[in-house]
Image (cartoon, rainbow, N blue to C red; front, top):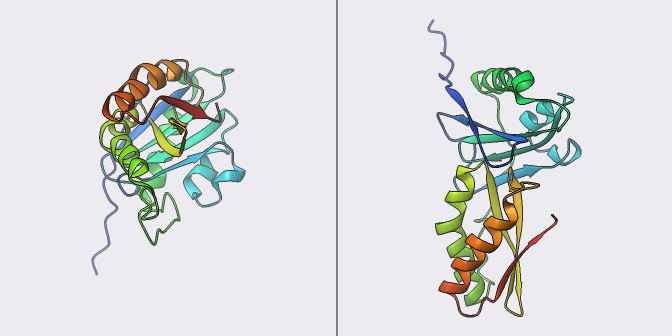
Length: 193
């Protein structure tokens, strides 16, 4: 009888602009493209067994999962050199065991809603096409929150949450792009930071 082989897992680490976050990149997709899960606490991670386990490390303060990576945010009291190998090895072992990273199913695309106004559809489209890939490169995500009176509100997740350069990214990057492409947009603000 043949024994099933475990999936080969290659995992590498990437730094990002947030010195307290580190991105652990896998050689395969962990969740569907364009979908992300942000866990600012162990209590919020009830649908992610991996995040639950990572929160058992005292230095882990936030876990973020998107496409083929997990971003872990640590407490300022510890240096990455002390814990990065332990965290990487834990994620690698978890993935090698074939365990599910997130237990979530969507009946419809969580990004787009047929009830959105035309301007909201355009805003979401620009965020998804132009901004999401760049923000994911840095181990984070940007999620549309609302649009009212010319103001777009977004949620910054993963390494973007609490990042020293997130305000510059928000105003110099995202706001400039949206106001240039859509005259209805006057300003972009981040919720919850």
